[in-house]
Amino acid sequence: MRNLTKAVAIAAMLAFPVASFAAQAPAAKAQAPAPAAKAQTPAPAPATKAPAEKAEHASKKVATKSASGTVKSVSDSQLVITKGSGKSAKDETFVVNASTTKTGTVEAGAHVSVHYTQEGTTMTATAITASAPKAAKHSGKK
Image 1 (cartoon, helix red, strand yellow):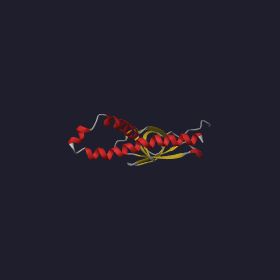
Image 2 (tube, rainbow, N blue to C red):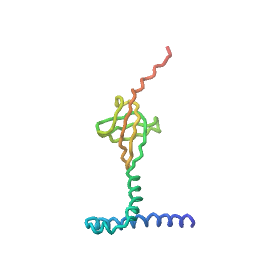
Image 3 (cartoon, rainbow, N blue to C red):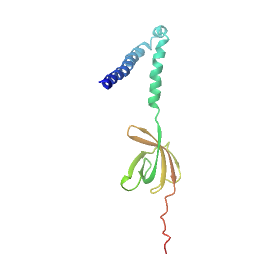
Image 4 (cartoon, rainbow, N blue to C red):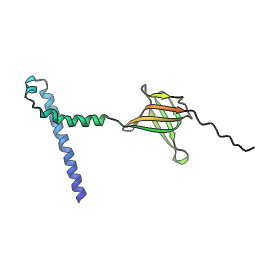
């Protein structure tokens, strides 16, 4: 019961500022063309927008992540790497664009380290660093 009460209280606290900000946005647009309305707007109005702007900037910031593995396939628009080996192997697909920086030769079999940003389910590579593919091990037995 206590957890339910806390959840309702938190939901109410979050819903109220969002609803009041949404109600202010159309009013601000309606007042913007009239110069007299700007003169009547008190100083606290920008103060109420400041937290919303900070939240907006925070949501636009996308965390940079990194992954490494062996290149399975590569093209001009995407890179597929395999992380792990055996049964735990997992393929990850990255979007490659013109702003992606590539260091080394990115080709199938090469070991790469990928720095990327993730928005939703889309992983966009920002930097790819490749090292030469590992040579086959020779057995020393004769």
